[in-house]
Image (cartoon, rainbow, N blue to C red; front, side, top):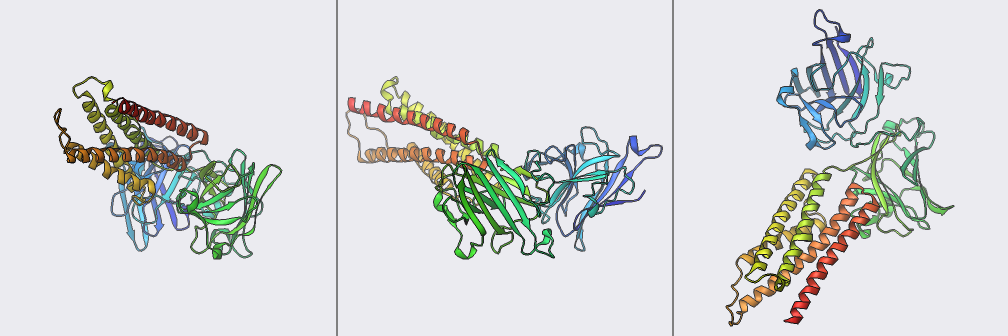
Length: 538
């Protein structure tokens, strides 16, 4: 009869009413609908989703963007590119609108509760997800989201925020849902208060994180000024250990506390993947207290206390945080033996592994470039160097051209995927050595192809080569060898970058790297030894 209210978060209100046709009852209703309003203090996109398990992937949502009509979406993943509109025949919302007026964004719609092929909204307990953006452009929601259960049949189903965590209320159950990750939620805190006791989070086998929030008297952890976090990392073995603080789950641009047994535990800026780009912060930012890293009883133990909010640094929130962990294989700070990114909610202890987006696109990029520079180009070079083994009549040249043409097509496609995906991830183009080398190779490859098309003709039998032909041959070979060498380096760097971005298993990465270098070694041996043999014989 009346709208019920549910306070989703501070400044975000949900209102809803069940519409029951005459002659029906809500419990087993045919044609029942729900009218819903979301009222947000500010201007932003808004969303309410319907879920079977409280997780984002596989759920369905109504999303409203100011200036457009709210519509129904499929939540296929954590990246905006896989948040897809439902087909037109499923766009059955009525009275749908979203407006931004008087400092509020208000979305309204009416939806059928039972629709073929969609998640049913029942007159009972339902799993919902809410989210909102920071502005009116549909983009990543950051920490502005949660999952909750709501019983639409409960009397007075409007639930105040403080009632959400009341364990005696069976009608409403709020669950933390870190929607930036795919795996099931773990609760390492075991329900403990992490402002009183240390909470545990197993980072990986043999690597434990313990933490506790220190809240000054008279402060609340959600809005705390001067809160600190005590942290311990306990690793089974002797190695450097690290915990990083990130805005996006990526290494570059993040900050970390790194401990090396026998050295001072310090704060670092993570500016790149190589050791020389992992630099200690300036002395005035070295604000850790009670910091130590020791190796004892077969374990490396790093302890420190850090201020959660420091000027110019990544803030640690009493909520969801993007963290990175890593450890080495020895006490010396070198390339890590293992690492991963994860989201940890410090208020609930809910931890989930973080998966970077666009894995399939970057894998396709790598496969295309390996086929181009690891297979077809070496075969094309071998066709030229070992032409004496092929039938006469210019067959070698046709093979050489054909393989290089396939290689160029793969190179262009792989290059295009890289540029498009980098733009999609809102990362700067050509910002690291791998990307800059890729651009240089692209230009060099185009020049090599043009040079092959406009090459000076070979002299007839008995004629002497003209200087321009001799110069072209030297340039063509030098540029070709340079491209091939750059390609070999690029592919190896690509394996490392992919491993870092997607936290691949170290043993898998090592196996792929070994297989790669074995293959490349065989290609080089055939080219060098075969070419030298025929050169010597001639």
